[in-house]
Length: 249
Image 1 (cartoon, rainbow, N blue to C red):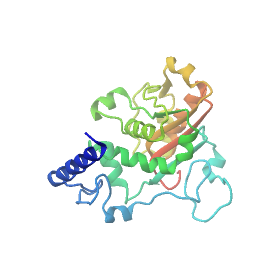
Image 2: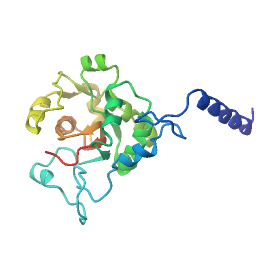
Image 3: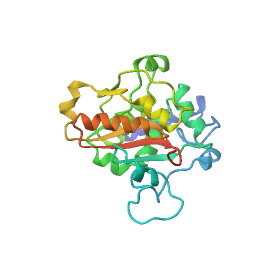
Image 4: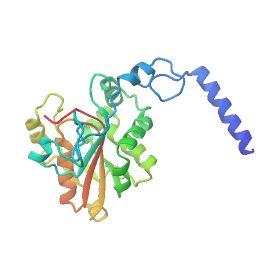
């Protein structure tokens, strides 16, 4: 089969499938013209993060700044990670999309979401020797059936061409759900919860790691993961998430 014939066949197959299963908005399920996209109404509600932002945690600033200025929390308590970036704000416009991906078995948007993340953190991907996800505890993984951070990290590795390490970091004890915890409670909740698998320590020695999670809230989880990875010999840790709250509290 020639390339031209193959291309026509794929296009015809795609049009046929669109008739049977019309493309739907990734967030609200309204019909859209192109697969794996948002409808105009949902797209207009997403607040993608652009400069100016904190040179450390990536929190958006309200006014223009010069250089890599740090926000107050990063100055007061510098995180273990080098820098963090996120594709969009976690707010009323993105919440349903993020939560359905995280809890409702709606994993099909993973590549689109990872492409947004890559656009926000392309320089971090270029700097990384390895990409890895924040892990779930085995019992939570069993109940949920998938780790949303691992799905995003895997797709991000495919897009960027960076090696993917899905199991180098492990959660060695179950931690309580953090949705309604304060920053202090979150810090205590994740303390000592992570470890680097022994067989990966030689691989990570003096390497740059890109740590991936779905939402950055207080930074407690990725900060603890970063500390553990640095203790295991990694050179530097950057963090890339799908969404983040506007500022650490």
